[in-house]
Length: 220
Image (cartoon, rainbow, N blue to C red; front, top):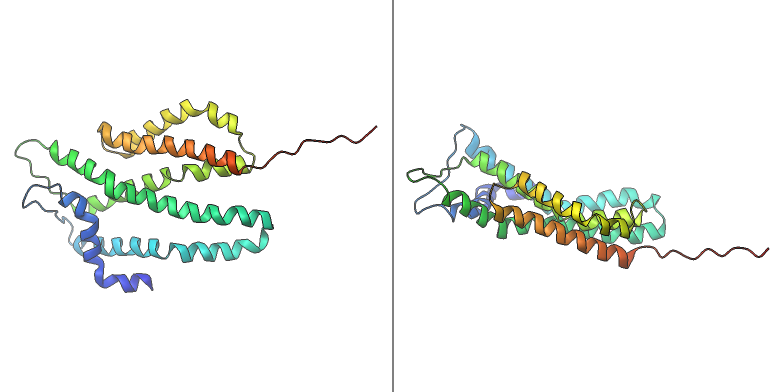
């Protein structure tokens, strides 16, 4: 239903998605479509992605309604805020990529083009590129959820997470190098938030973790 409502605005939604690149192109610059059906199907794909995001709260509610009857009361109290926070963090990661990362990345790409080379990106390739970054930053912003749940379920201790800081920093920069263009700024813009969110996850896990009750031995 959401897709049907968004279908007439598919081209407008794609224009909004393409704005970060178009704003960095020289005056008169434009994008191109190399496939016969690309001008039609790419906006449709963008509309479908938007419909999925808009309907995500309802989808998560349906999943929760199916799973909730099998959970204990204390598990429900823990999982509800985790689901809400996970959705908000994923959307925050996408917003961070759109408003902060895309202008830097596309400015770098356009600025490093050799003289006499016109940057005219195919709209299909552009969609694949931005979807990869959206997914990467959305998952990166899920780091606090993963940390909190790992501690909550006893998979790892707070002390072990603190000891692993160095490995996490290195891993964050490796992920940044894989999913971002080869400029140091965009790599930092993915790696540094991952590290900071990891630290946030440790803090939240320490505040919300289970309190271990002292063991009382029975009298002899």
